Length: 89
Image (cartoon, rainbow, N blue to C red; front, side, top):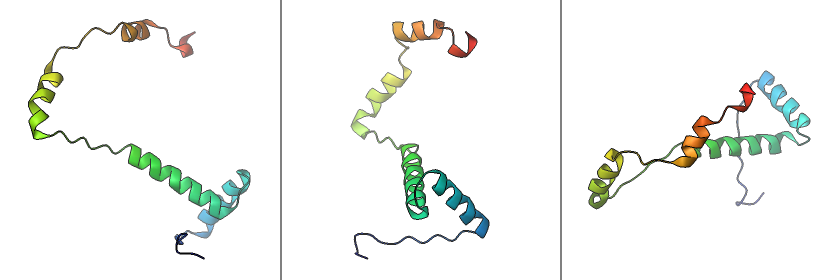
């Protein structure tokens, strides 16, 4: 094994391993690939949900004016709000 592919070890109960193995089989892949793929998907989602916005001090007043400005009309949003949801058709 090369240094470019380090190993990550995870302890699971026998029941958890059976569940993961069943899911991997259902996905037509091996357990290692399944766990790696699902862990990466979860990591990407977790990182995507964590957003930090940094506003430079010199732009803070401009940001405050934007936040407190009255909303501008938006025809597309007005049209969307007037549309009947598909589950009500």
